[in-house]
Length: 425
Ligand code: ZN
Image (tube, rainbow, N blue to C red; front, side, top):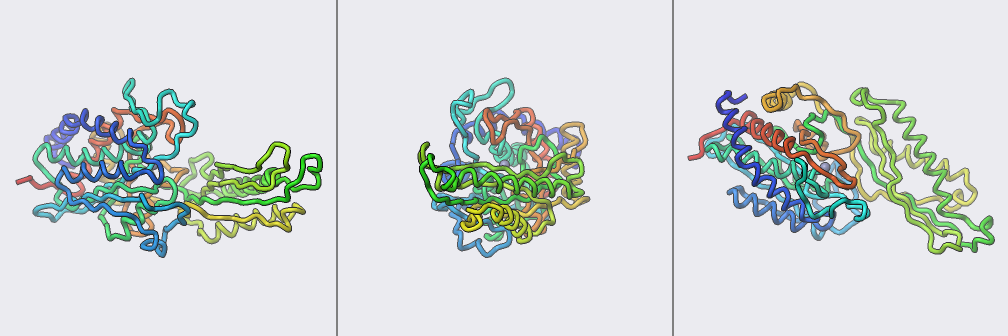
């Protein structure tokens, strides 16, 4: 830990920039950086990094550069607008440890706008919370990384090791943005990712797979419904079979999720089918998001899922001769457990305690984050630690501003301690 005087100076320096930090976060939330539309928000990040004198790398992700790498997830959309941004701080003297500060710019769809109290991309502050799609997940954290660095500069010091500030796309669907940073050669002695997990340290995360199941039936008039094959109703036994698998995996359990009531979630997240109310539906496609435990092999999981679907389909006379088609169109993400007892974890716990007066609590996540890339494929301790947010991926998403302040303070202390500091000349 920095000495108490320096600690106090760093905390005050975050306070001094906090109004500006909230303004910048609000401006960034105003950018609807939905998948495929992240480019203007990434331009904002690139300018902000450049203004601060960091060396900026702003590049378009090429699928061919990454498709051969472990951790790659299949892509079903165009990457014409998929740009990553990394700002690099290089120390003058050096000798300190390096650090990656990572966050994602992409946000998930809003859902029906009439279910929001205020429009999702018209952010506003109310009662100590910032509202808007992406406010919590995770623009507040992403901007907090930037302002933590600013706080050090404000008191005339800079990190004594390289700091890479990464703003990546594709976290919510594949993770290919973080993977592209690895492919481009970015490595650090530790990584910090301020996902909105309520000032806890993520101890483990499940893996996630996305797939679509496509059914095609023989269309018929509803008067002869018995002779047709109803593609929508044919989905039900397949979904039931998948939920049986979900139940079996939760029963099997995993030590890192011992305190978690239901870590594995299989979600039918989208469904489309049919053309006309008086025609038996000829087709149906449903999208599944499934969780899996750390250590479960992706190929084995896919075999298990495909066998469950085939077995259920075999019991249906129509599906038996028209087997459903499975398409993987997003996450093929392994689970991951944060190794215990790393120095990075110890330092962060001290910084958290210096700010909050409370011990840092672990949190096992039933979702995935980009931490897996650092942990599994780059042997880098990845600390997921961010502010308190509510209703992420839902309506009226919001992030608590005092929590953002504390996390930014803990981050600034962490940078100073982990990398060491040098005086700016
Ligand atoms: Zn997130």
